[in-house]
Length: 205
Image: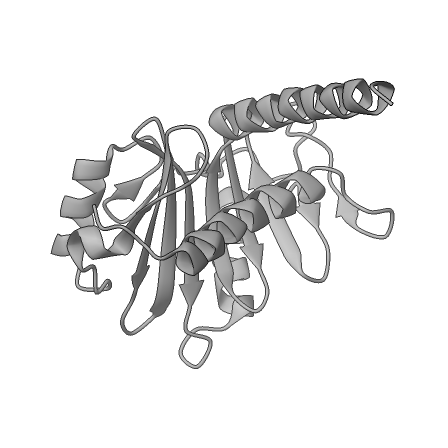
């Protein structure tokens, strides 16, 4: 595991925080966005009930896999230019690391966020000179049905355990909701503690 310079560590940290902030905001869709009802087999339109289960895997990369399996899968996959430990960074948060690698052909870049040694976020930025947003969106709706949330910039499919979003210009994110929600809850507890310590300090005057 290589040691990064302070500036790079800050960049990695803010990249991680961007993922968290975006996903948290998307869970509370704005008024103008289209939020679709949760799936109910008894109420689904014709053709919706036979859609495929939302995946937690892209090629040989999956949510929940450990760091060693992730490295091995990236090395074997010709769509990625993975450089080993040079592409792995430790984050200044609890037991978290980030794998960032460039891609080839259809994939420009990929990010993998790990907590306690397991992947809980995968993000793939695609090459819009080769693949367009419309084709990816149609593929998802054909296989997995209508998104549960849709606005001009983002389409989201989700189950109790998994969340997949397509973001413009063209990034696809896979998120383990159980791990992500735990992080959000812990962040709230940390923030509450900071507020309390701040007030205690002010009270000293």
